[in-house]
Image (cartoon, rainbow, N blue to C red; front, side):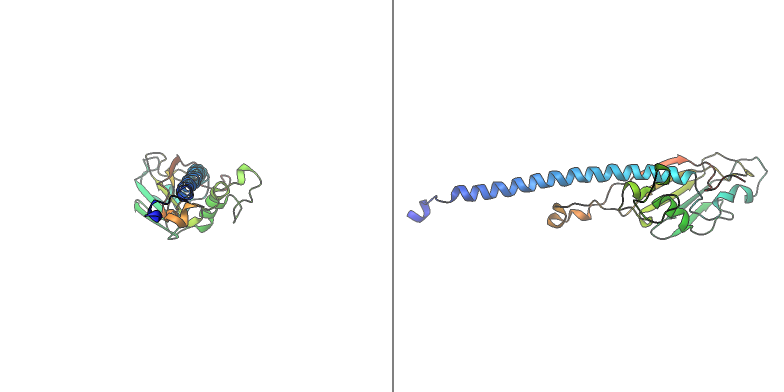
Length: 209
């Protein structure tokens, strides 16, 4: 009876339980704030990637010459096409009018991910040379999808190539958690779909000839 009624150490047990809950709550709050930072940085990186893709050689080989090789009356509307380039598969697929559109340009994808004239992250000397991974270092070519979609702009025979809408999206990129990752397997939580679309310009990394 004395053992059952003994309450010595009860405060220590209660404090241990409460401290464990408080530690999980505090560390979890830090992790979720860091996850929000990752989401925000990744969204900005996608915007950067779309801007670079709009004024650079396309990831799909031959796309910047599509308006010239397309069969049709010069000056007529470009026929519909959609070219999807997947960095994970290192390939491009096309639906619609795809005359002359061929393989996957790894150098063009690297320019979007790493920045102009760079093959690694965090080495940009100015904003002009920054790529997606300069903003969010965990982004690699395998995490990027670039889609070129004809939306009525441009015309058959246009010397600068077609004027598609360029959409850059992220894929297969999970959040990174410092404290809760191993505890609750939160490192398997994928980021939500992040996409940015912008109208292409000359689709060339060099000056017009």
